[in-house]
Image (cartoon, rainbow, N blue to C red; front, side, top):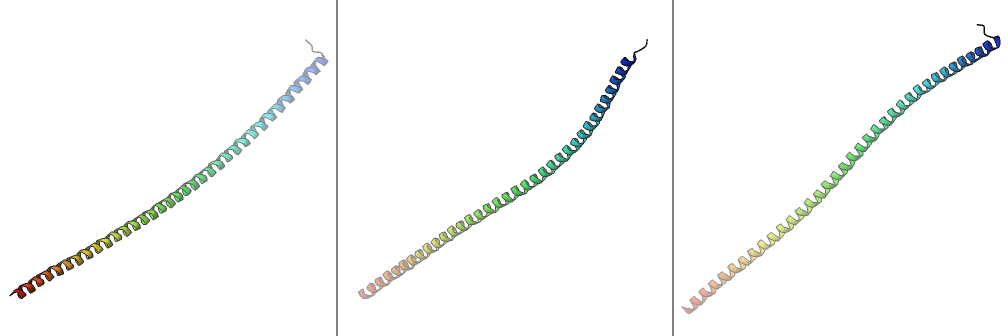
Length: 131
């Protein structure tokens, strides 16, 4: 069966159009694949950058927390030193009061001893006077 030249030309034109479209689509697909690969690489780089920044930020936070804990510990130790100074002062005050009490008791003892001796001597004087 013979195909008429106008039909054959129409079909050839249609085939050429489909081939051209196919090439255009293949080119578009290659371009999109390239763009996808580039975007994947870019995304990978961005993720790596974010992870690097995250690790750096974590390290900074860790260092800041360590510094804060050290400052808190120093403050606690200073408070402990202050408390111990106050306790030491209190003990020194108690020791001073104890020494004052001992001195007062020693004075009272000396006075009492003197008074007893004075009484004994007065009694001896009276006894000697009576004789």
